[in-house]
Amino acid sequence: MRYVAFPGHPLPVSQVCLGTMMFGDKCDAALSEAIVARALALGINAFDTAAMYSAGASEQYLGNALKAAPREQLFVATKVVKGVDRQSILASLDESLTRLQMAYVDLYLIHWPVQGMNLTEMMGALNEVVRAGKSRLVGCCNFPAYLLASANAVAAARGWAQLRCNQVAYNLMERGIEVEILPQGSLEQLAITAYRPLAIGLLTGRFLPGMPMDAATRGMTDARVLTWLSQHGRSLERFVAYAQAKGLHPAQLAAAWVMHHPVVTQPILGVSSLSQVESAVQVPDILLSPAERQEITDLFQTEVTEEGLQRFPGTRYNFPRMRRTLTLAVRE
Ligand SMILES: NC(=O)c1ccc[n+]([C@@H]2O[C@H](COP(=O)([O-])OP(=O)(O)OC[C@H]3O[C@@H](n4cnc5c(N)ncnc54)[C@H](OP(=O)(O)O)[C@@H]3O)[C@@H](O)[C@H]2O)c1
Image 1: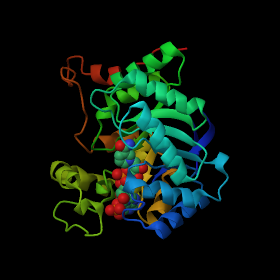
Image 2 (image 1 turned 90 degrees about the horizontal axis):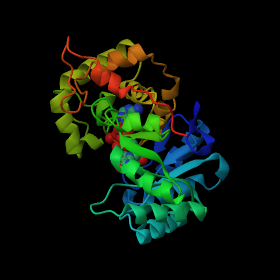
Image 3 (image 1 turned 90 degrees about the vertical axis):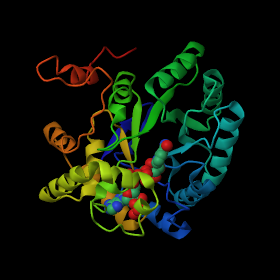
């Protein structure tokens, strides 16, 4: 396993984080604990859960599985169950800590923005959490760049703890974060953790055009998989062939593609079996040059550009790319 720095935290974290959303869902208590034991044995020290995953069962099973491990060598992230008001933020964390059987988490995340949210109240409550020692860092998931910047401006003006992480969906088919969120992550030195790196299993090669779907997979129950399959079927076939030609499993190559974006801190790999953990721990060993990563990117037509910034060969066609890699002096 390779380890990377997590901005604001002293512990080097495994280059892949284990996603536990299937604990209490596809994985019962015994399988969840076996998965975590295997992950620990293979060097994973970062775990992602949430209060809402299987109504708390994910946190419970993860807590049971981590009980015997040295706490200071673990990085555990969880998320507020719902609401971003002070009461929800404080109460949800206390409940999570009870289920996790821990005195603190390493990262406490707002799960989703909420209509009408009050940024001052939210940031004040997150500051209380940090001051009370119940979480080492705070962050958010699924925040647009402007919202994270506004929340941190509120906190900075009051000397409060700032959001240090944005956890966002990123994979070869969902690339919207390249427009604003990844550049912001680089400029503001944020942790960017990437969930859904395999597009719910679609990038593993288990679903291809014309192929019957395996009834045991999440693809059977998640409508997004069929939608993406109809939109990107040809690209998926090319991607699977590309992985096979390199002697790699498509699931590992798809995760490596996410991991090798220079601003991504860690992909969060969701697993539902022991063999998937064993596959996940090999991802950091896959080395991709920027040119190889671009070759894989180009197998899909999924680049997202803001209106007016499309490429027009011969006329400032480099503008979108330059804009995404624009560097500024890092803010002190
Ligand atoms: N913050 C948020 O809003 C948010 C939202 C979603 C997820 N998350 C986090 O991100 C984690 C990952 O998300 P995700 O599980 O949706 O995405 P994912 O990593 O794209 O998909 C995981 C699924 O891919 C399949 N898979 C994994 N490894 C495989 C392999 N080696 N070979 C074949 N199939 C394989 C499994 O499907 P089967 O189970 O069907 O076998 C697994 O459940 C979650 O566990 C959670 O911690 C966060």
